[in-house]
Amino acid sequence: MEKKQPISTKQIVLTALMAALTIVGSAIRITMPVDIAGTTSFHLGNSMCALSGILLGPWLGGLAAGLGSFLYDMTNPAYIDEAWITFLTKGAYGLFPGLVMLLWKGNWGVIKAGIAAASGAVVYAAAYLAKTYYWSGLLKHGLTPDAAMVTVFSKIPATVFNAAVAIIFAPILAVAIRKALEKNRLTLE
Image (cartoon, rainbow, N blue to C red):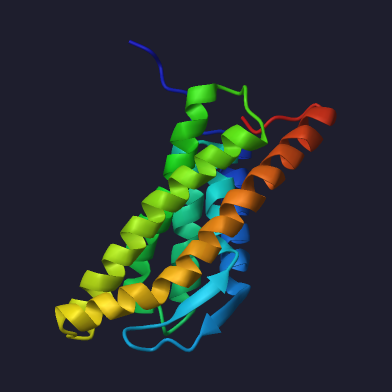
């Protein structure tokens, strides 16, 4: 039976750092005037979620992404009631890139990190749009199924934009951070 390695102090600090960067990225936003069943925004939080997974791996990356997004939602009255859902969906945004990165076991660059970021973006977009339909549309606001679907369609442009930004910038940042760490003989583990 293989003995599990305990989480190191460095891993805890890096997870907390990425959670903090996710909060900041989520706060840097332009909110759109779509108010059928909530709001929609262009922001940098998704980039930080993908970056967390790429750099920290699936479990710590997912935790950093979910926790940072959850804490941001807890500070904003518009989102506080769905913070628990955000923890799960944004946690998946960090988890999936981390899982994809495990496939390459340290042998990766911008393209592979971009594929990892795209996996997180696709999973998150599906989860977010499902949440918009069921939670925000049908349950919370009592919309008809057709009206809830209109809400979903109204959120697609911002969702696609945020995903594209994450797919482009998270891999570039990840490679730059990794090179800087290697140059200074530091590791993320």
